[in-house]
Image (cartoon, rainbow, N blue to C red; front, side, top):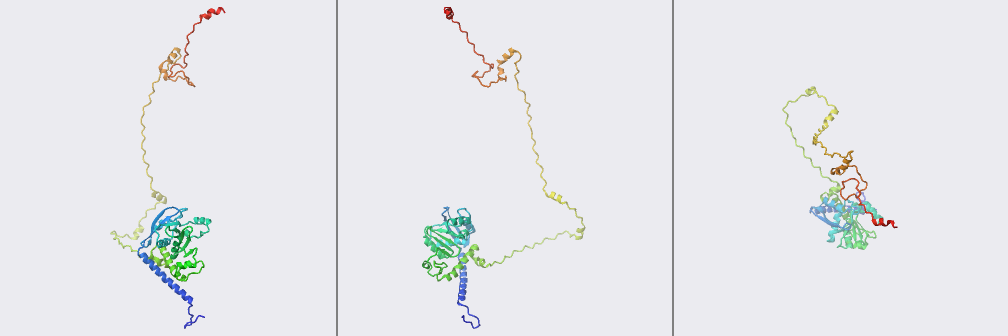
Length: 395
């Protein structure tokens, strides 16, 4: 039985008292973290990251924070650089992830750029990887732009895992065979889980949200919840507000600044006209001109077509009439002598006498201008042998 108080009410149970204390401690820790974050941003901290993409084989260095605020142009560059390298599909990455990587990189003391194994994954790529391997989550943080698989060439993978787990900003995956560590901004968790002794060596004070393999939290689990959860919430609110720490409380509790009063328009007074005022009765009696029909108004509103440009006159040059060329009078007639004489006349070489030869013959090797039939050469008559005539009678 719980003892009654002097006023007749029951005294609060010890469990309720502990919950109240934890809630109060969480609220105080939250405001302390918010104030600390405001101080860090007020210092004008500038943060840069250097990456090397192991698949595309390209590198870059981008300053994502300037004077304590996120640089929107730098975030846009990071969104494109961390795109899905399989189909070049970009996504909006969580700015908190860059802060987490910056903390991990600073704590590791590395001097090499961060090697990227995987960053953003499109849903199509994630489904393809799930068909190949059962170790790919269906609702992977990579699809939300909140995860990255990294490697530091000059830092041992086990040490890189321990650094990321001690920060307790989100999830940490350990892949020693592939030599990379998964880092995301989701809930604080780790896989594979450490044993109770390994986790106790990593957190000597026991203040951690990580659970060992047996599922039993360390002694400082409740204190870690009171400190780590408000800190991560403040970081998420800061990322939502664009990195400005002065608006963390505004982003969380919805407080809005009062609207600024708009400046009143200047009161300009126009000088009164010197012409006397016309009474309304006179205006009513004045004849009103007839209204133009709507079709005429539409026609008048249309811009009249421009007159066509005058065409240039085409002047034809007066050409002289063609003079008939001197022709050769035909000489061939009914007279045979005249016809034969015309054949050997040199002027007939330019006339078309109507001769056509289907196959060219070798009548001459030069331009033959004589008659159509070449005369055959005449052979001289051979003398008759007298001997045969003389002895012909003796046979």
